Image 1 (cartoon, rainbow, N blue to C red):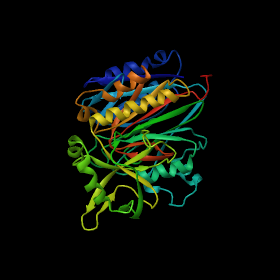
Image 2: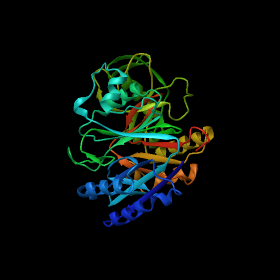
Image 3: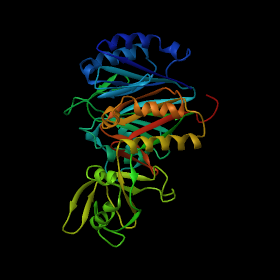
Image 4: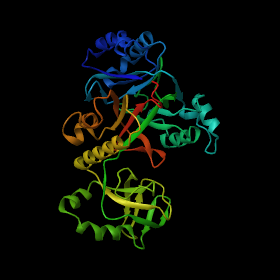
Length: 396
């Protein structure tokens, strides 16, 4: 298994891109590329057809997906809001790949079978171990799709992101082999001797204590531990340090415990969701997720320091338990991270390499990130979702 990550910057990026494609086999130590991902800044939207033609001409037997993105990640750098193309390619012995496009206007019914979901996607690979999804945010009910694909491919890890850089419908471009799409979702599926280990950094830290939901109505949180959530916050916030009290004014979230078997302090145990409304009359909160009585929730805060510490903790936890050496990785990072959050370029990719080593890494800045938390796939915000690829066995 051999991965390579390349980037091409500036208005003349297509010239270097063409030359690199011609030499890609040599870069992969003489092996043909099995799979590839391409991420293209909106500056090249008008020539995406030419990019697809170049990819097919130089990589005719390579399974490929990609999308346009406001920022691309490749070749050791994160290029934000500037002309650039990123390419992540891999030679994968004993691995089968397939790429498909899902039309959001023809989604299966709510009670559809796993077979119906696979037929909708046109992906006859029920044994898939990895699904990498790239979706158009304007046309795609992505929450419903990731839930359907969890059902259709129960053994697969889903990772991915929503294309960015398009300000209105039909402006984002999705690549699927030699085809271009402006709606729906493209998927690259892997099976065989390959595993993707997900690392989903939601960038939050808990405050207060875990609380049990005692009363709720769909996504309205009415009662926690015998009192209203507003009353709990009114008692909690004055006890926090001044920095946290100020942060809570703009960066307060709620975490929903997804795996009760995880220790309370372990990172990654909560699915972070927005607080979207407050009713001072009855002390209720509206939450950006469905709730049910008996679930455990905890309030969280997010800032640049917390985001960095959360990612570092998760990366170190991964290296401590990693069953094998990673060969290459994808990174799907929120548009709200990067220089906007940290005030410096390349933060998350540099931190990744400092902990996991100089592994080929490619990806883009998303309008929403896709990755598993607590055994199910979710769509996130303000998140960096990694997928670290490695052989299932030592034979490749």
